[in-house]
Length: 327
Ligand code: F6P
Image 1 (cartoon, rainbow, N blue to C red):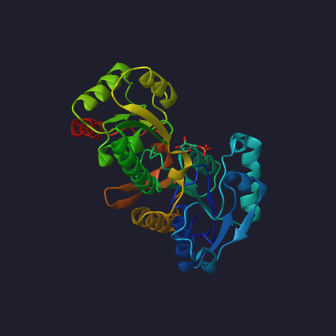
Image 2 (cartoon, protein in one colour):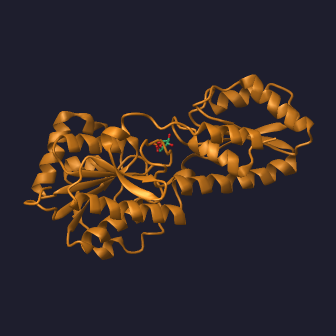
Image 3 (spheres, rainbow, N blue to C red):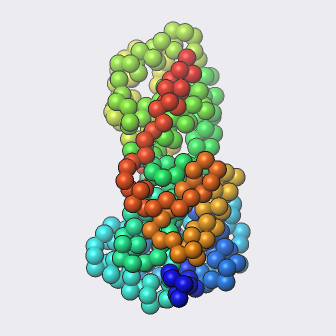
């Protein structure tokens, strides 16, 4: 956008794995856009819908009643096809045909890479980080993380009830792809006996020892939170543990996609509303190739080049604290 060509029409898509809070974010982009006199076009099914031109206008009423709903009313998809230059050219043709002057991309790591490709091809674009994995560098937190964490906490609290009543150990697998963030946070706030994350090599004999020691100290349960990217994976770990005499009998629970669903928490609704409103502001200011990032209490425009300049690391001080508190 330039002074001569102000933004008149915004296109908006959600992409990749859905995250609770995408709907309040859609609502915020639409209403912030309308408040500035812009047209807003919803692009369905992420980048796939962009390539195919699956567009529909979004008005204030189209986004009524979605603030409290999980998922995304625009649908989402993972789209490998968008990595092909021909598909990118097709997407740009669709954007130009629909006279879209600025695009908002809501999604995780892969989706923001798609946003960067659009920006490199001259499209005005702002990304919004939404992924339960919290693996996007450049923002303290992504939309969806808080809700997923609350879902995990609720599940582990329930598992602890049954574990304590039966003198059992539970291995509980959380999502997060290659990030142990959700597992670590869940471990801290549920008081898990152990947390296994991809960022720290698992000392399998150490796990066995910790579980045995917990039993010998008279604990009635033992909760081990295992991030999905941890090595060895939960199935191998369970087989090994079951082959040993630990005192506890062991059960495995894989939380899976329930972590992605459900009503967005108050925190996620607020974050989504702030990110969505800011993304529109950034577009109208002429910013492009940036992402909304939360730094402390401020929402800032973070260049996508910075976002992809390094990977987000696990806060090791918190990891060590989780271990220290789990005695
Ligand atoms: O990136 C979000 C996420 O839920 C990861 O935590 C998980 O590894 C992956 O998506 C699951 O993907 P899918 O929904 O395609 O099975």
